Image (cartoon, rainbow, N blue to C red; front, side, top):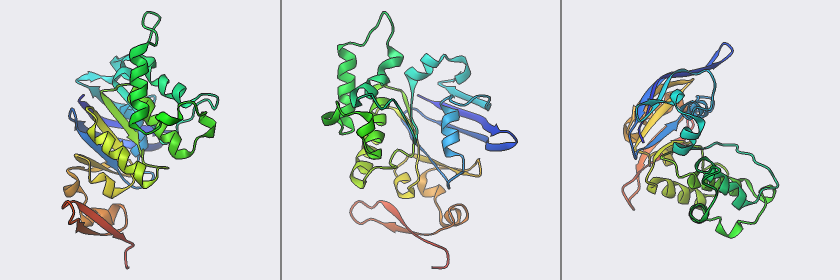
Length: 255
C-alpha cells in the first residue's frame, strides 16, 4: 500500500506539534521515523493513521484521501501499535488478539475458523502462543507490547504503523520483532528510538521540533553533522566485520 503525506500538520492551541510534513512511502517499504524526544514522531504517526481530529494537509492511501474512507475501511488497511496501549484487565491474551479481527466481522460474517487460524498465527509470530489464557493484568510491559503487536498482525493490514515497538522488550525480543516486521509482506512505518536499529529501514525521515529535516536512505541522512546538531551526540561510524553492516558508537560532545 502506498501512503502519501502532503503538508501534514497538527496543533494543540497555539502550539504546532507537527508542521508541513510531506513524503511518500512506497508499497512494501519499511519507512522509519527518527528524532529526539518531543520531535513529533508519535503525533505524526497518529496523523497518518487518521487518529487525530482537525489536521492540516492531507494523507492519501493508494491515491484516496484518508478523510474519504470510513473507519472500517481504514481499519481493514491500517493497523497501529502505539507506545501505550491499554485494554480491559479482565481480557485474556487471546481475547486481546482476537480484537484484531473486528474490522473484518459483521452480523453476516461472525468470527470463524479462518479468524481462529489468523489469531493463532499472530500469537506464534510474537512468541505468545503459550500464554493465550493469561490475563492482561498479569502481563509484563514487554509481554503486553508483544500481545498488541499480535493484535495488529491479526488485523492483516496492508500498512502497519508502529510507535517505538521495541520499548519494554529485552534484546532477544527486540531483534526478533525487527526481523519479523522486516519480513512481513506489508508496508511498514515505524518510529524508532535506537539509531542502530533504524539503520535497518529502507528509508528514514528525521524529525526535529515538529518538522521533517531530512528524508532518504539511512546511510545518507545519518551523517555526523546531523547527529551532532539534532541528537547532540558525537557519532563514530563503524563496520561490523561479520556482515559489513554499519553501526554507530555514540559519545557525548567533548568526550
